[in-house]
Length: 315
Image (cartoon, rainbow, N blue to C red; front, side):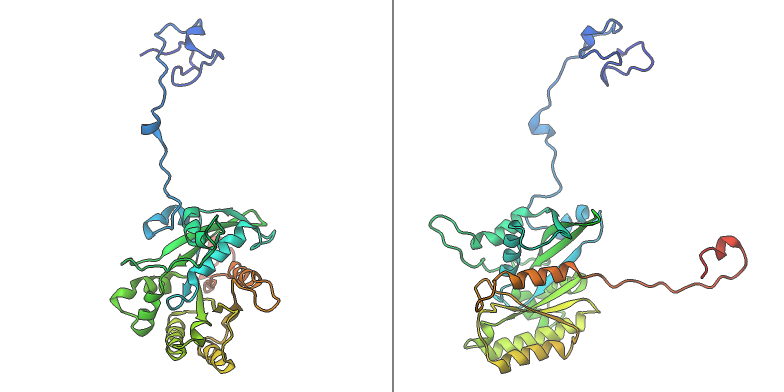
């Protein structure tokens, strides 16, 4: 096998130790000059472990390798504004209106997924903005997860996964926690670190307000039973719609009676009075950024002897 006589040169596997750009220019090289081959772009393309679309359960290995992400689950009936909430966050984030200096955008593995949910809210020639299409269950057993990472002031990255789940899952799960077609809702109830309860003010003021109230009360009771101390927020969606004060108080009591520490927010893409439509989205998102998992406190162990190796660290 051709090689350079110099002990510190490993050509042709590396460049010439004498600095020659080509082996044919090196006076010490006595072997044949290898042919220069070009990479076949079709065969040597690097395949990334993500596609840019919403992540599935099998796609999470490269996200969780850095640290366990914060999973945000949005529970609510069908057409209660869950996908619109995600789309509004994405558009505000794109305009740098969602975070501050303490939380800087650090990347996303699912930008195409975010664009898919937010595209309907964008202006396009001849196409005015509209609400995002209904999220179909499609027989799936886990929600689509939209990833975004934020860089904190200490330069550490913190990953978040926002679940885009259909409302039918939660409606069935609220009635029967073990329903076969509610597996996606059960997955979120088990793995979510933050739970948002979407209360649709439009449905609570419409012709089926009684059914909407009962469905929300069932869902609030189910979330409380599955909560296990995790942060929960009551989110009034379509906050520009007025509802009866008695109905609003009934919905609030349905949450606070079983989860008295639940936070409360109001969001709407339409102006509410003279307020800024983005304020509610910003307040809710910053509350999510500030959430922390419950810490684990290990019991102290009393030393059993005077050996310095075991006594070290004793208080």
